[in-house]
Every structure is written in structure tokens, then in C-alpha cells.
Image (tube, rainbow, N blue to C red; front, side, top):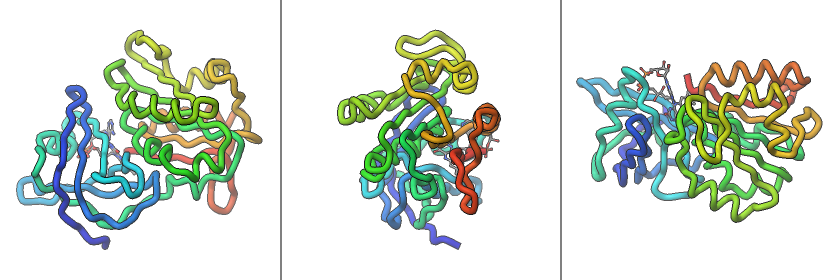
Length: 247
Ligand SMILES: Cc1cc2nc3c(=O)[nH]c(=O)nc-3n(C[C@H](O)[C@H](O)[C@H](O)COP(=O)(O)OP(=O)(O)OC[C@H]3O[C@@H](n4cnc5c(N)ncnc54)[C@H](O)[C@@H]3O)c2cc1C
């Protein structure tokens, strides 16, 4: 069992009614971008723990996490009330295989995230390994409303640093939003719109795909990609699709 340590909340940023980020000072062991740790609070005498992806890059201080308040969700709603100076439990050692070391090299890396499932990509985007191993990186974020599109400044910074090699596309399902496309990521892959927008083809020869967040999005996207000849990436049989389901 990994050791629990106490961290101190440095900031709690409420983006919308349902979205917030915590910055936490904690002495966790070094982790790899894309991994997650567990966070926990004592609620009614019981330690309630859930896994959360690091949004911050390895070595970055404070640590940062991005949350959605799940309807009726115990921990995500409890953490919403935390203030600077409050304590929170974290597992000292990180976990998970949603990391670049698990992704075969290719020309293009596509990152598809829904909601807070964009978090691990921000950690990965800050690593040197990403830019050493892939020529083009396309980050695609699927959300319900325009207000759910957070961390635009961070995205702008990456665009500024990698103007030729980095693209960001946002898909909003429930309303029209400036600078974003209306609809689902899955449909935009199926009808070829995403490739047209990016000017890059999705092909098993040139593309690796990382998918994170809502399991329905992950399942539907995997199904669409499999029709195009893509395969799940397994340790023994490398393919092109690497996934992280949030529930
Ligand atoms: C590897 C991994 C990494 C994760 N990283 C993150 C993260 O960075 N940010 C984050 O917000 N969540 C993340 N999650 C989900 C998180 O662990 C919890 O499930 C979530 O916060 C709900 O916990 P809860 O106690 O509030 O509600 P629970 O009662 O445990 O869950 C209630 C329901 O909420 C829904 N749900 C769970 N997570 C989400 C979500 N992110 N967005 C929308 N609906 C959701 C599901 O339907 C779930 O059954 C991750 C999960 C895994 C497995």
C-alpha cells in the first residue's frame, strides 16, 4: 500500500459552478507526466479517496489538479470547499500507464480529452520528450459549454512556443462558442472534419492517439478509429490507441 502524506492547499480556483482547480504543496515522489495520484479527505470519520491526474508537470510546484463536481459525488464536492491553508491527503507515490513511455513513436500525436480529462495532457505537453519524439501534436478538447474551456492561457503559451507543430481544437456540444466547433469529437473524426480542420490525416502509419476522460467518449472514439484500421496499444502488441477512463 502506498504511503499517504498530508499536503497543504495553496489555492482553490473556482472556474465555474462545476469546475475548479486545486494547487497543493506536498512532498510527493517524482512522477511521470500523465500519471495520477490519489487525493483524500476525512468525511464523516472515513477517509474518502479517489484517483486524480496531475495537471502540473513533473517537478512543478505547487502540484495542480483540475476537477469536475460530479452530481452527488462525495469527494469532488467536498474538495470544492477547501481553502488555502487547509490539509488534504495524497498518496506519496504516483500510479498509471497513461504516459509517453507507453506510446510508440510516430509522426503525429493526437490527444483527445473530455472535460477534466484534458488534465494529463497539460502535464505531458510540458515535457521535452513529447517534442523530441513527435513532429506534430494536436490537442482536442470536448466539453459541454464554452465556460468549460479552461486553461486557454496555457494553451496559448504552447501555441506560442510551438507555432508550427502544435494545434488546439475545441468541440462544444451544447452551444455555439467563438473559436470552437459545435458537436462531438467522435462525429468530427467519423465525418473527416477534424482532419480537414487540422490539415493532417489520421492514419495508423503516422498517428498515435491518446484518449482520456468520459468512458463513453473513449468507447465511441475507439470504435470509430478501429473502423479506420487503428488498434488498441497493448504492451505485447503495440497499436495506436492509448486510453485512460475516468470512471
Ligand atoms: C485514473 C483516473 C484519473 C482521474 N483524474 C481525474 C481528474 O483529473 N479530474 C477529475 O475531475 N476526475 C478525475 N477522475 C475521476 C475521479 O477519480 C472521481 O471519480 C470523481 O472526482 C468523482 O468522485 P466523487 O467522490 O465526487 O463521486 P463518485 O460518487 O465517486 O462518482 C460519481 C459519478 O461521477 C461521474 N464522474 C466521475 N468523474 C467525473 C469527471 N471527471 N467528470 C464528470 N463526471 C465524472 C461518474 O459517473 C461517477 O460514477 C479520475 C479517475 C481515474 C480512474
